[in-house]
Every structure is written in C-alpha cells, then in structure tokens.
Length: 452
Ligand code: PMP
Image (cartoon, rainbow, N blue to C red; front, side, top):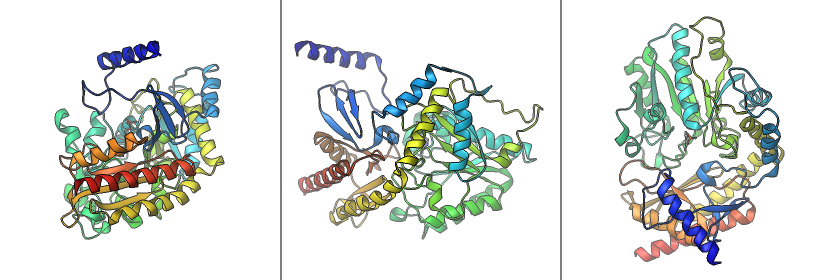
C-alpha cells in the first residue's frame, strides 16, 4: 500500500514537471486525473475512483474502452506492414477511402492526415488550389461562423471564431471571415434561414469571385451545442452552389453516428458537401487519424502529371496503416451493432428527460441531437444573462464528485462559459445513460438550491 502511494506521488510529480496538458492552466495545488483503467464508458483513476466519461474523452471515444477487435486490427496490421507512406499505397487506406465514399453517399476521394485540425488545413489548401486550377485564382477566402471551433493549427485557428482561443496567437491567417451562427435562443436573426441569407449577403459584398469556401459543423459542438433547423444547411448548400463556393462540412465531432445519423449533414435534405473533414469518431479515438474527403469533380482537377495539378502536401504519419485498419474495424462495429439507429432513438429520450431541467431558474435551454447535449445555464431567465463561469464550474466539479465527467463550451468569449456539454460514448448502456441523466439533474438542482 505504502509502495503504491509513493509510486502515485512520484507519477504526479513527474506529470507536473514534464507533461504539458491541453487546454488547462497550470495549477500547483490540483492533481491531474490520471486514468489507469478503462472499461466501456467508464474509467478508473490512480486512486481507484470510477467515473462515467460523459464526454467520451474529447468527444471521440465513441465505442468506449477496451474493444478487443479494434486492438486486434491494429496488432494484425502492425505485425504485417507496420508503416508505409501514402506517397505510395497500402490496403487499409485503399479500403477505407472506398468505404468513406460509400458512407458519404457520393463519389469521394480522401486525403488522410492525423487529426481534425490537419483535416481542415488540407481542406483549405485543396479548395484554394482547386479554384486556381478551375480558372478562378482569386477565390481564396473562407467563411466560418462565430462560436465555431475548427482546430488549433494556424489555418484552422483562423477559421475558429472564438476570441479567447485566438487572442495570444494572432494575427490570424488572412482570408478568413466570420458570420453569426443560427442560434435561436440568443439569435441576432429572426430565423435560422435569415442566418443563411446573411451568408449570401457576405458573399455578394465580398465578391463571389473572392470566396473559396464555407466551413461549418452541421451542429456547432464545442461552441455551445447549437442545433439549427434542418432547412438552414439545405439553404447554405444552395447558396454555395449558386456562388461556386465550396461547402466544407466539418464532421470531426458529428461524424460516425454522434448525432443519430452517420454524418451530421445527413439530417438536412439535398445536402451533398463538396468536402467533408473527419477525425475523432473515425477511429473512436483508438488511433489518431484525420480525413479530408472531396467530391470526385474536385479531384478530377488534380489529375494530370503537370506541376499545376500537383497537390504539394505530405504527411508522414497521415493514413498510417494501423490507424486505417482501426478505422475500418470501428466502422464495421458501428454498422453491425446498429449504433447509429440506437443513438437516434435513445438520444431523443435522453433529451426529453434532460429538458425537464428547463423548469429551473438557472437553466435557459436544453438542446441536443443524437448523443450530443447542451444545457445552457443562465443567471437570469428573463434577460438570459449567462450564468457565471464559477456556476458551471461548480456543476462540473460536483458531477465529478459523484463519478460523472461532463464538459462545457470551450473558450469562446469572456462570460460565456455557460453551456454544459454531454456527449457520452455511443455504446453507452441503458444503465450508463440512466446514471448520466440522474446525476446531472440531481447536481444542477442541488447547485440551484444552494444559490437561492
Ligand atoms: N473540428 C472540430 C469541430 C473539433 O471539435 C475539433 C477538436 N475538438 C477539431 C476540428 C480539431 O480536431 P483535432 O483536435 O483532432 O485537431
């Protein structure tokens, strides 16, 4: 026992000295949660505390921990062709690119990378080069929405429109414009369709001959779980077509069943994105992999042996054979176990139950789609003034005390860290979901009663 305690202490010390954590401030007084065991939707920390992971790690552990078939797929690939670059080819990447094309219900060609940020960077480069090769070299601008997160690298961060995340790292790359998102609870617009028409206005006044693409998530996730009407994306897609602007759909979070469809864009009629970017749920987090799928008519412009057609981009580890093998197995499980249909059905009942919270004074709105839920906390229901960061922080801490990990919207702008986010693994059992709903409800009710 003594030995274990000393070992744990040493680990914490080493962590504090040598491991630079993502998205967290250094806190000398707080110890990191160090996971030592995972099982389905649950993990156990070094002290033996067990938690339900209500945010699937970083919204990626979609099939939960410990799937032996996935580990086996990685093992089998690693002991055979351990690495091979995609300057040439290998079987898992070929099979996966074909599989993605059929899942996307179109004819797509995929460029593989390692992460969501990279997948978006690749999309921007392909879009600009495509327009240039298509006789429109002046089309270089990208439009994205405020509150959206598209990644951490400079290009993807430039498309990200959350002031807090960008402030220290400017100036952003040029050519990135932002528009307000559809957000009925706090909208700048009368309707979601008006938000779409605003995009048309921006394209017109910027000059359609300068705009390369629009990048958007079907449902803004980290920016506060925004669920627009289905018609919004349909209209944006039309506006893109009318203006020869590429529709780049960021499915990094929403892909592979998270929203109760295989891809988030599939909720909206008549939408066939020009480019789709993927990561996270593509491998359920078992291996790093990013993917940028482009419609064949775009890829056509890159066929040819001249320098003009040459896509000058390379990624050493992008499309790693083991990562592609893992993705194929992950997709096979999602299909064989009917995960998408289950998420669609159960998601609706979980949302109904969570919406009971709207009777509380501190809850402005509860929204969701599939297994992606947002609980918007307010300080004043009439004015919709957002709840203080300390309040959402308290709810998160209390949930953790009761064995449940939940999140909140990312670093948007000061004063707006008030949307709690739940995104449990898609394979969560009925009991897991019961625990999630009961715990969140109890904790929010307790926290509200303590503030009165
Ligand atoms: N797009 C969206 C919508 C995301 O949520 C994220 C990550 N949270 C990214 C892109 C970037 O993905 P990665 O962290 O794998 O670079």
